Length: 114
Figure 1 (cartoon, helix red, strand yellow):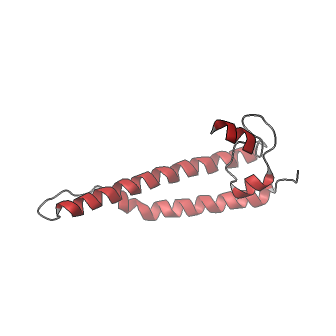
Figure 2: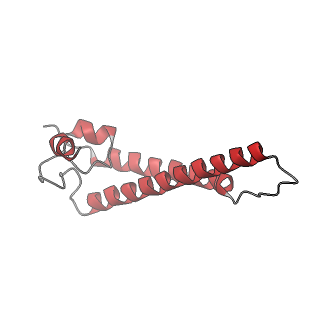
Figure 3: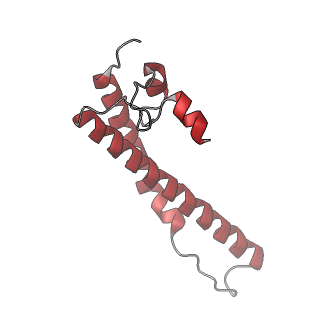
């Protein structure tokens, strides 16, 4: 099995973290509290605003989860545990890590979990 290019994957993770943080900063205003003043906004407009708010909040939770995965992957790199399956402790295929450097399981173990 080919070697894992740790420096390249570290750089990819750092870029992904920066992009995710930037998106979070620009998206925060979308999840602000929706004003429910019936005199100012019609019922359908309020429903649209509430739906947009809920979708924005869900996206924010997904971004926070991704930031956690990125931090965990960087920590595994620092602890020299990166690239090992958390279940069977075998090496994760480098192609899988190139596609998703936050992967914590090999394909076989991930398939068993699903």
